[in-house]
Image 1 (tube, rainbow, N blue to C red):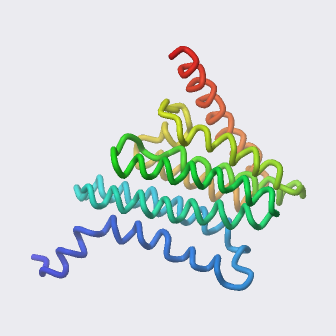
Image 2 (cartoon, rainbow, N blue to C red):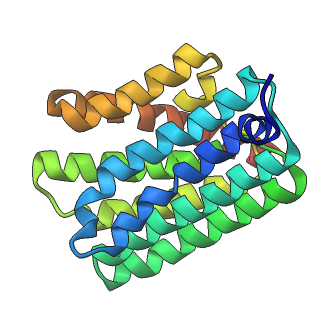
Length: 219
């Protein structure tokens, strides 16, 4: 049998993973810390998925864990958007504040009502990741594209219409979730796959966006 301390640790495994998912983001505050932005985004995405999987598979779901996960999402995603936005100049940094506001609205809504999976906030970070990878691959300044990503995703984060056709939303099993993260790693490490993988994710998002917008117009 587990001793009391062991039981506490076991019951909080998903919560520990949530916290471990954001602690390395402190690297962004060291000199030249921006160079770690891409691996940190991928690492955070993996840990964010892992805590949910563990909570489900180990039967350790709780309101506290769900709220902690939301808070960790808010910390990670606002930090990523702020750091990236400011890195590419005043205008990009200013527009990033709109995305940050949308993230906070979305996360607070989840904390108070638990009405979603939070995928729109994670989807924003994935789009930012793809923008940075494509800019590196093709050698262009990503500032304008980042501004577009911030603005479009800000809309989908604050409206209440579901966007079920996004690739991550379709990943219902552990294997499917793992494959999503494998695709992110491939897009980072294998440049020849970046455009294809980014295209799949962005097309699925835009399709979901249009479908949700159509529902909003009908309503």
